[in-house]
Length: 245
Length: 242
Image (cartoon, rainbow over all chains, first blue to last red; front, side, top):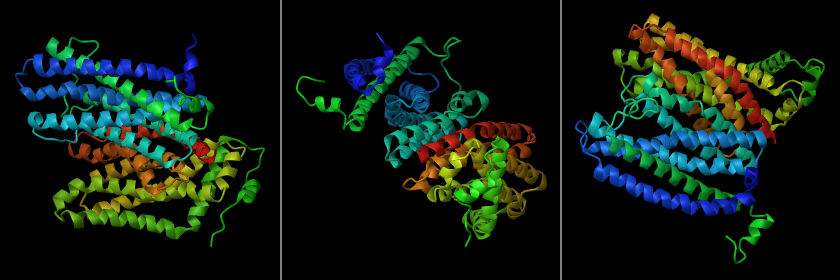
């Protein structure tokens, strides 16, 4: 099977339609399991009390916020380099979900910071750079909305996304480079996790749930974008006929 | 009235045989500088804007000397950023409107070289005056000599980055609705690291840490911007001209 078969909107559209239920329902199940572990099974933290349970949402959305930007930059680079239609559509579909994840990460972080650090907000390196990430997402979305021609919007947003990707390593390593308020990561690929196994399990299940949710929502959005942009093309006209997806 | 060089004068001044990158930089730099010097009033307005923004902060917050000395560097940086932003739409917009930009893009010179020349001209006409004025305005805030020297050095390295990054935003928003505010939304987040390290230089002096770390980071940022920004901006110009 040729993978590139699905690089055309007309073949990707039905594929995305088939994938959405799988990712959507798995996301829902995993979120229920993850929240049950996080809010039911995991023990109360002896330092932070119950407030620490916010991390089950906070960490997952913060990871996703950075990862979606990298994925968006990747699709943007493809759209710029090969002038492919679907890549630009994927980049367009990713931006709102990325902005949402960044917002959730900032908001839950503020709610967690109040009982734990005693402040909703501090001009700490990681929080500031995450806020800049939110502005970068807004910039990409606003630039997209200001351009009427879709192909020009794809390429202009591509340049902007690639320039902004410099920020991602800064956010990721900010807790190591600047020793300010936000603590270091509790989970690492190379060292043993600094938390109870049940907490780690809850966090990882939530992370996968957020992944699947993002994939499902982005696929839904990209299907809408495909229909909108390909509205004058023959194959979208056939979709309204009975018996098609 | 100033008559801007048109496509005809461009062809007259740019011999097709000499298509080196440096010649392109020189040509664009000389042209934009000449245009800027012929509209001195506009340059004056931008500098006045900088001076007025800096003077507003003590009036709006507190005239207390110790606090002013603390917030002075940040204010000078934010004002420099705003002044740079204010002049950015001028960078490509008039050339784009009368079709000169299209002729420039068709020229035998590499487009990144021409765009670099425009960026340098932008810095020379808006960034450099800001750097020169900063020590005088610093007196308003009672910033002491050593801190002021560090701040001026940081501005000298940092303001070119603002022009370089700003040019990308200016090229991306060419001919779009709400260009000015959109430009601010695109450029300001990208400039935040410059602002942090630039204003942090003075904190480092006060903390006795020395300015080397901050200035080195700014210098590294400048080098990356010098390599990357002309390419990104010329790609954006080509996208706008499509």
